[in-house]
Image 1 (tube, rainbow, N blue to C red):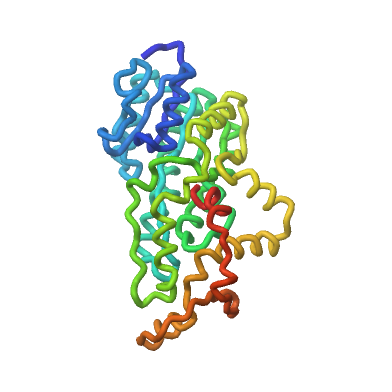
Image 2 (tube, one colour):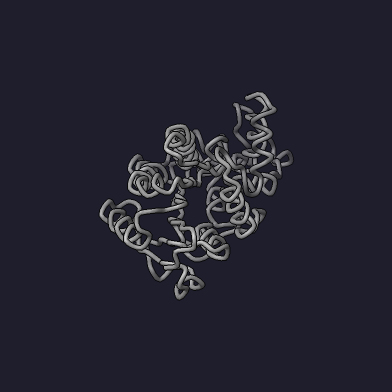
Length: 325
């Protein structure tokens, strides 16, 4: 590899995703890119044959795989790494009451523990370079979007940890950028396996809305992934640190959290949630308890109030840019 280029390692670089866009952007700006993927065949084709890119197989949940990646990067760079981007992640879209504890723990392993493991492993290389750590969290970590509690909470934990790492790593000469990612148009949902709402769920009336949240349409009003990647790259080059709100709906979310009282933010989210909760029939809730089905009435349960179909709020497009983070 060329010695006149800075180096960056990015996890989760499957073609069509945020990681791939970041890898291609850094590559185009004279970085040597270590693009990691769990499945080699999913690596960005534009990087496979480039002398200034190295595609590495890395499973961020496997300590041996992480150690192997560290060894290869150390050998290639002489023990230095200018930028580490923790981008790998996953999602669960399902009501909390219907989510298995096992699935929730697995998501935390991927969205929280894995970035910590990768950061610990590559820390000596970052410290030696006085480099930059970039953690891809989400606006969902700051806002309680319905039916995404496992994702929201795992990203909230990651966000909090990232800001703490920023304080801890600063004396070592390492900057930390916490990406508060909003909506981005990617192929993320191409590999998403929807969880089925159980027939006895309190939320069976919202089944179609929940399934729609996982079909990728939430990203339709997100920003272009290369536009997103460019802003992240610029922040790294400007030597920024702390939270970077980037992606569809991210900046409005930032200002809402800063300017509005908590009850105001929650009130707005309730309006957004109405699109999904209006499918819930009050009778469905009773039926889930007593085990029988009765004639359906189209009504919405929210704070024990029934809203008729004519008052159903059409907020889907408004909240899509934020909920796709």
